Length: 309
Picture 1 (spheres, rainbow, N blue to C red):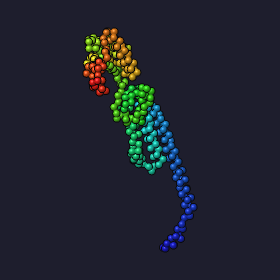
Picture 2 (cartoon, rainbow, N blue to C red):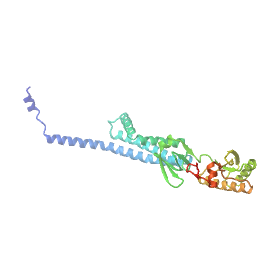
Picture 3 (cartoon, rainbow, N blue to C red):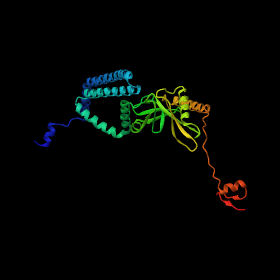
Picture 4 (cartoon, rainbow, N blue to C red):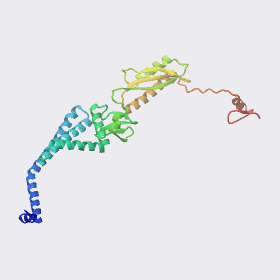
């Protein structure tokens, strides 16, 4: 059979018919997909509502035994995990040709891409979760990290918020907090403070130590156990240096108030006991230029030499 004969037996389809058929197929496909889309929407709504319920429930449960920051962050992460799981299920219901394995593979590739694009954000998030799990400190603790000192206000997924002692807000990324040395001032219920009092060499160091200990015991806020101590720390230029040591509440304001009162009380006690607290002794050497200057019998150069008249 020739080509012309075949063309006569199968005439070309009208373009209008092709468009109509394509539109009809699309409408039929959409009508067939409506039930699946409805199921996907219902699954998504259920996942959203369930994630909110789980988030609220976990927040209440964690709040009883954990810190507020831990309860807030962990409940939020659990809610997101539940919602994403239902979203994947809704996608599989709406598009039956997409297999769960394909979704997981695509999600894995997407996670790798997001990991490279948002490395800092993910690192801060992971550091925040580890901080909340390990809990080296919690909201309300007074800490020092990266040269910043203050009271912890909150630990979020991304950063740690600190209110400095002079009333400023400092926001530190969680990765910087996790990787650096943290000094938690209020981790233990007590903190030891020290200061040095210098007495004259002529005074009895043993008696001075007893006077300092008795004075510290009378200060309100200083713990009785462990008891205050006064130990000779060294011999200065003009004083015997005695180190006063005592324990008290670790919070910054209380520390400053108690230390102030302790120094004042010790000073008053030493003065009442006639124990001298001298200033540094400065020795003057009578050089020829010094004697000449006192006698006014020669000119003294700026360098300290004597210039005869």
